[in-house]
Amino acid sequence: MPMAPAPEDLAGLSLADIARLAEEKTLPPVEKWNPLHCGDSAMRIGRDGTWYHEGSPIGRPAMVRLFSTILRREPDGRHVLVTPVEKLDIEVEDAAFVAVEVKSEGAGRDRRLAFRLNVGDVVVAGGEHPIVFRSGDDGPLPYLAVRGGLEARIARPVYYELAELAIEEGAVPAGLWSDGAFFAMEAAA
Image (cartoon, rainbow, N blue to C red; front, side, top):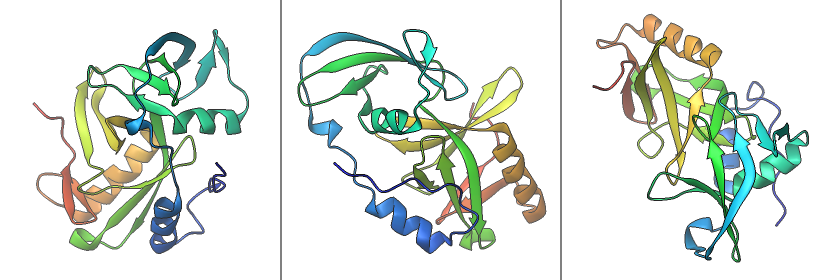
C-alpha cells in the first residue's frame, strides 16, 4: 500500500494542511487482524524512539515507518507487530513514538496543536488525541495519545515549547487548549 511521504517538518504547513495530511493517511486495519500469536520479533523501541532489531538500530527510516503502521497495543498492554497472518511481540521501553515537533495556531480556546512524530505521522491534540502528564523522577512526563492505545512521549524540547505557550497564556491551572480540549500541564494523581 503506497503511503504519502512524511513531512520533513511542520514549519511550512498550515494547520489546515496538517489536518488534511492526517486525514489522507491510510493505515492498515490492524485492529481487525487477529492471527495466532507467532512469537517474538526480536525488535524493541528504545525510550528515545530508536527502533532496534536483534540489538542493532534499524537505519532505514522507511523501514521504521513501515513497521510503525503495523504496530498495535493489545488489551493487556503488550505491543505487537501484526499482519493478517502473524502477530509478533515487540518490546517498547516507554512509548511507541516520540513527538519531535509541535506547531501551534491560534490562542486560548481557539488554539490547535499539531505534533510531528519521529516516524513522520502528524497528530492534532484534542479530545480524540489527549495530552496527559504522568509523574516521573525528573518531573511531569508528557504523552500524546496517537491511536489504539499507542502513545508518543513528547520530547523535552517540545515540552518546553508547550510550557512557554502555557506561561504566555496564564491559564490556571497551567495548561493549553487544542482543538476544543484543555490539557492541564500537571501530573495526574
